Length: 254
Length: 290
Image (cartoon, rainbow over all chains, first blue to last red; front, top):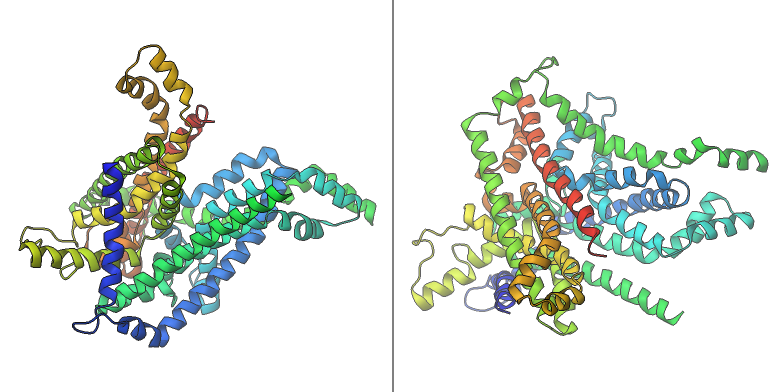
């Protein structure tokens, strides 16, 4: 019980601290000045929008990569499961900073695939990097989702009715794992919005490096940003829970 | 046409073809970049095989960086593990209602993901030179943290900050393991005359041991690879491995690109060892906790 109280205090104080500090920009009274300053900064919106679109791209790539693969492993290649699972866990083993270091050296302007030479190429590379970061969670989530449906029977039924692979994936499998995909997507969103290392080293104008830069130069805006970032993380996790709870509800009704 | 497709669809090689997109992605964006680092660590500037980079790691500055990083990771993993375990145990065995348990787990999910730059800001606003607690202690009790030698932008400052994502991660991983301890085991032990302490020492802890050690390894790797929190808190000057590597990638501060590869290779070795331990132990512990 004591541990619990101590823990609550330890977790509450920094959150209270940042919230309080973010309101102190105007001398003597609490005000939302720091937030106003943040929201008036065009760079805030530019970097925020940039990270948001990268998150969207990462989710799309992740879904296209993970759903067919996890489906195929369950349907046709159960013997490949250990290998695929091992690869999806690799991003936990190799630190992100090492992966991005490899990208910079492997895809520089003088290499066989000079991705870092153009802004679009670097955006693509960053999206791939984020996809690897999200891969362990996305794969696990989708694979667990597939466990609850009878993949083989559904596939056979669809094939009997003349459906091709694309139809089966898009109209049979995907709708059945929507909850898993959504919860993977929200986690991806939370990861990408705050990510710093990869974006900073690839020199892209993302939200994480923007926050870091502001932190080095300002006093009151950083805690305001921290409150915003905390709200985003909380929102993503809340949505994750909401979707899975809704799904349970649906299942209970059915 | 249709016949042709069925025949193709049944050929064994076609099965493996289904993994092609995933394989290409994994090779291009995980395996090749990592290999590039590993190979580079054993090459001289002109591409010949050498062990010189490994030997060059043995300078005082790099040795200190590894030592500080390892110390930081071990201490935050131990403290985070202990506090997280105590909190999880309080929730699982303390007979707390679901009203407390679910929010705690949700909060743990949030807090374990609330790492990096914003986390550093939160701690600066709380324990920094003009932070909430610092000022509160000074005005109400005349305690000057700074004069007492406390500095958030130091090793122990980092420890306190890292615990904010280490403790919740421990709670998230260990709660299912604690749930898996069957009531019957405890009853059986007490029927045989065991005290509470004996039950923990001789039944519960041996069963939990692989989970505990495995989670420790995961927490260790989690802290060892973290860049953003430390960077936002202390800037580029703190001498830990990820920060050093960050500076090396940005501006070749070591003055030797291949030494940079060797630095990264050392990081891979350490996190890979920790994670292999974690994965192996998790497989072992899943045998009991079904």
